[in-house]
Length: 108
Length: 115
Image (cartoon, rainbow over all chains, first blue to last red):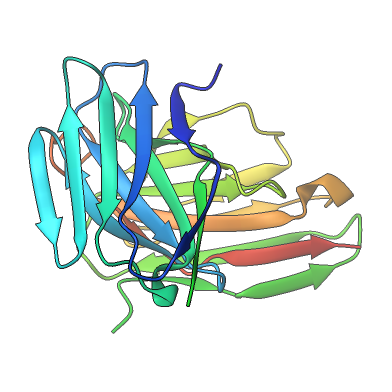
């Protein structure tokens, strides 16, 4: 079993829908990252969390340290949000341990 | 100015060749990483360097050798390339390993195809 599990693996939504991607992890962490990878391949860091909740525009990330669970929400989804969203936790030596990603496709 | 830059972006080469991928960061970070993304898009750590010293060396064939001439550069050299080495390789950097809240910055990736 992977140390970082994401669900769902694939997600198709209609433009405007509210989207939630979940991440559970089984190791002790100092921080959790949400990353976005577009079809072109580049990886961008969306959030880094160690507690609570963060918001950037239409994106919201939450983390529950006790339950070892984080969620990424996208409000009013748009086709340009189509990408792979990756949850990653920071290991004890600073490296990231990745989930397998959630492929999101938002249809107009 | 690109924060973490990798070259080349694409690399097509024959089996048995030796090749290098270069990575440079201009963020003043102490720690740099190489990650491999396989055909199923799963990312995994390969190496990590902190201030030019190797701190993580995952189970990677010894045909792969990282080299860090200074803390702004971490190059990846691969000897005797095999078909299974085909993947996308990402360089990343962050502030000192162990510091709790450290953003990670990624290069644009190098798509290596071994034919």
